[in-house]
Each structure stands twice: as structure tokens, then as C-alpha cells.
Image 1 (cartoon, rainbow, N blue to C red):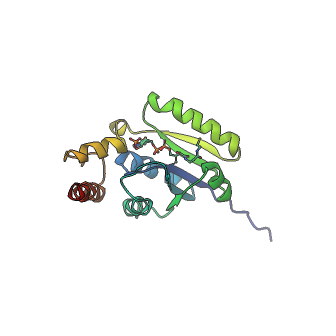
Image 2 (image 1 turned 180 degrees about the vertical axis):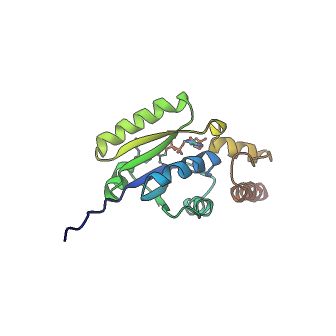
Image 3 (image 1 turned 120 degrees about the vertical axis):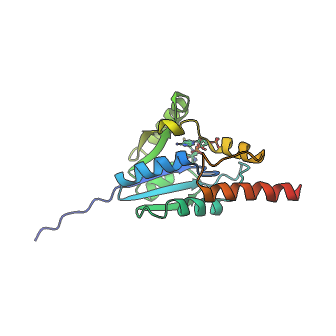
Length: 171
Ligand code: COA
């Protein structure tokens, strides 16, 4: 009896996610169904001063994607290409919000392709309504007490405000 070989398609959406936004979640929700296993990779960058610890960022994404069975949220450090090779990632997914993202993403895709030619980079065009969203905009608005409900899920908004309250108390 011949046995069909099963090919598992694995995708990875890497980023800083500090914090995850509706723009990121739009990419995750559209990309995840294209793969059997879809990883969201929170990059741990010790040289960057971040608002949230990596484990907090992982938890927020897990909560926001709890209804997507193929999504696994992980933290990673080091080279993206190395992680992809070690975990047999077929494609890295990145969102393109505008032409402004293109040059940077193009360079990153070419570099990753040189380091891990077996992993493709796939771009998803951001949904138009979310093309202006970024994590730093969210952080800046929240730091002045502004309304971030149009950019992040409610649980993330509460966590961001709580961080700034904590910081303000610390002085
Ligand atoms: N919706 C909303 N915001 C988006 C977005 C989307 N679809 N796509 C990108 N962004 C925003 C992010 O919010 C972030 O905003 P901010 O700068 O205002 O905080 C910004 O675009 C950068 O996006 P991010 O996904 O965090 O990318 P990055 O440039 O920090 O790259 C990695 C992160 C992890 C992909 C990259 O640094 C990496 O691969 N690092 C590993 C080391 C390595 O391999 N280096 C060689 C790579 S060539």
C-alpha cells in the first residue's frame, strides 16, 4: 500500500510587535490560513529599548490570535535566516503598508534569501484602512494619553496605558 507523503507548509511572520497592532493582526489573519503551521516570531533585540518585555508581547499576540488554531507565537533572537532553517520555514511573511516600506523590505528579503535560499519571502499588501498604523505611533499617542482604540485590540490598549501609568508613577 502506498502512503501519501504529507507536506507541512510553515510560515513565519517576524517583527518587533511592541505592541502588536490591528495592522499586524490583519496580516496574521490573512496569512495564517495559507499555511499548515503559522508562526508569529517576536524578535528579542537586546539593543533596542522596548516598551514591553518579549514574554508580554508574546502573550498579547497569543490572546489576540487564540481563535486561530494554526498560529503559534514564539520569541526568537539571532538571525532570522537561522531560525527559519532550524524550523524548516517555507516562507517569511511581511506586510507592505505603502511604497515607503518597499525598499527596506526588499533589502531584507534579498539578504535573507542569500542567507537561507530555501525560505521565500511573501508580501501581503496591508488593508488600506490600516496602512498608516505603526507600533511607534501607538506608543506616542498613548504616552500623551490619546485614544489608541482604532489601532490596537482593547486588551492591548489597556496594557499600553497601564505601562505608561506605571512609568509615570516611577517618574
Ligand atoms: N501593520 C502595522 N505596523 C506594521 C506593519 C503592519 N502590517 N508592518 C510593519 N509595521 C511597523 C511596525 O509596527 C514597526 O513600527 P515602529 O517602527 O513604529 O515600531 C515597524 O513597522 C517595523 O516593523 P517590524 O515588523 O517590527 O520590523 P523590524 O524592522 O523591526 O524588523 C525583524 C523586525 C524581526 C523582521 C528583523 O529585525 C529581523 O529579521 N531581525 C533578526 C536579525 C536578522 O536576521 N537580521 C538580518 C535581517 S535582513
